[in-house]
Amino acid sequence: MLLFVGLGNPGAKHAGHRHNVGFMVVEAIAKRHGLPPWRRRFQGVATEGPIGGERVQLLLPGTYMNESGRAVGEAMHFYKLDVSQVVVFHDELDLPPAKVRVKAGGGIAGHNGLRSVTEHIGNDYRRVRIGIGHPGVKELVHGYVLSDFAKSERPWVEALIDIIADNADLLARGQDSTFQNKVHLAMDAKGFGPEVDGKGAK
Image (cartoon, rainbow, N blue to C red; front, top):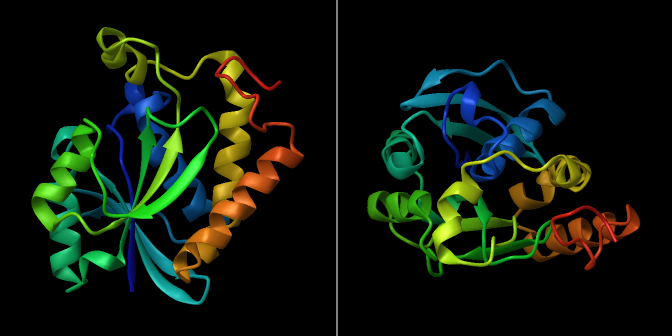
């Protein structure tokens, strides 16, 4: 079994924030793979079903970003999972907009959601890092991540979410590099290649 976790803040007022792109992606995966309705579990909402031939529990913590690890730890311990069976989807300031990187372990780069998860379960979980770009100076970061994607960004955001959901079976099977390559090629094909700068494509 695997645990797919989206990081974000609960509630309608946060739904479109850059910081919530992890939520958006995991919600799209659940929808794409026809999983049952979300229900309250593990201090958040969860659903479960087969993805890529694997049994996967999807979780959206309801504990707010800074306490994400409480929900993740509860689910992981309930299912007696190893930390390597946890996949966390999160926004990444240090990646350009629309870029996706997958890695196990590593630093938290000031991300409070990752910090909380690491505190509760250790550091060797898999991360799907979803690039949102950086506002340029540290002082602007808080407002940047806690504001909605700009209208001009929405085309690449929607395309990327769809492509990740389409290829989630590769993540479930542990084919992280293949997943990363497929996302990259599919985004290129849609015109959202290296030139995406946060203001739209090319």
